[in-house]
Length: 569
Image (cartoon, rainbow, N blue to C red; front, side, top):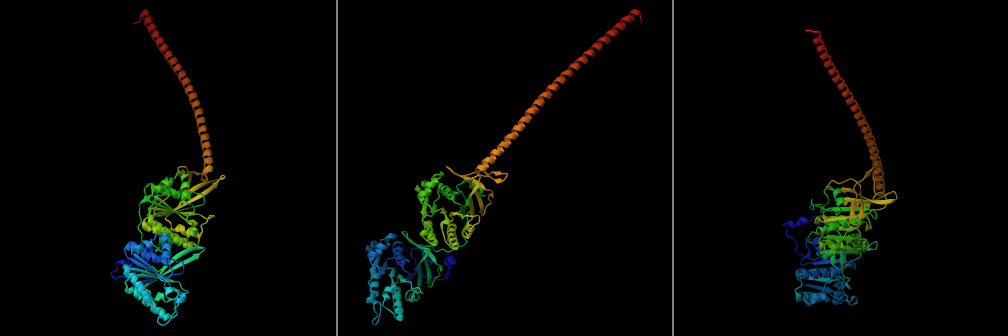
């Protein structure tokens, strides 16, 4: 026997397989690889309150509505009116099916005090009654609820085994697929400990209470001629019927996408190497109270809905109305997405179910709504063993990855600087881890964001301050002062000090420039004066040279005249 994951490839085998009848309960059909053995009886046992009768009714109703197979419900404990009333909350109209001749509900009254073994004990009367009901509508499915009522006064185990075999053989000869319910015994599956040995398929239902929280589980104990899931699987019974979660581990064979989608915060996108999240990745947003985890999640959902994608928001601390109102205060209008049918909220207190019941519920909601992105806010609301929390989130992450759903989880960090085991285990499951923190300085708190990891992409290692504004989350540009990254008023004060220093420097430079300008002007004046003196001296020298020329000319003339007068030749 194998689990569903390890047996997925068995459908390609050429070995003739056992014919099976689908129950119409998706999870149960998945873990049994097709349903219950066709034309054979299945024993469904469990303690009171496990849901045996509801499984049987669902098997019949689904068979009629989805597969066109009429059915017979033979009850030894409830009348038709009581049964119809009890299952009406699941949306089943038994009276309507009876009127349409698709279902026969036969109540057989048996009083324990009237049943005594006297001579040969047989079920011929029951066979006649059951056979008539089957033949009347051509039934293909039968439910007997419960088998103990038939043998309440019977103490001979040999006769009990013989009559059980006759009962099961009769069902086989009629060619019907049957569910026979039985009560859980002390130290054994059933009260008599015989029913499971003569059954072809045995399904055990369990309803356990741990820390005041009820969890229903299902296990296929036996399945002749077929492989099946052998683990315990949680199942949920609510107004939407029965939901079985068959997957214990989806393996690591899921497809991955290189498509990148926006986080809804432009500044955060720039910090991621690919400017967003990979589609189908798991994102963890952790931080202390008041850091804006839900706001970041709502921004992610808002961006997805703006792209026309369906979003599913699982809220475990606030009601949908409260989340919608609070996000409106920071400029994120989730109501319009709800009205457009793109956003759906599923809210419940963590204490309403156990871990696996919540997982079964979320699995069903994902199947029904078929979202592109989901948000779980917060996972830290779940209290319990870290192993169970980790296993539940692993299954949910695997479900999302196998369907290409991008999942964002928020988590409230515990007090102190160190993580506890649960937080450490959860973070290891995630592809992207965003840490939000409050930084206290100068008597105030400021919010900072950092990326601790982002698988498959390079990312910023810088701390970034962010603010919650009327237009959503605003990532403040990085500012690194002399003592590191500064935020809030510390940043404002440091910027003011730097502006003062810069202004002082600029004033000093301006003063030096004015002094230099005065000196330049003084030097220019001196140069002008010296130039003027030089020009004056040059003019004087020129004038003196001209006078010398004139005097020389006059002397030459005087000598010529004197020579003429002396008669010199």
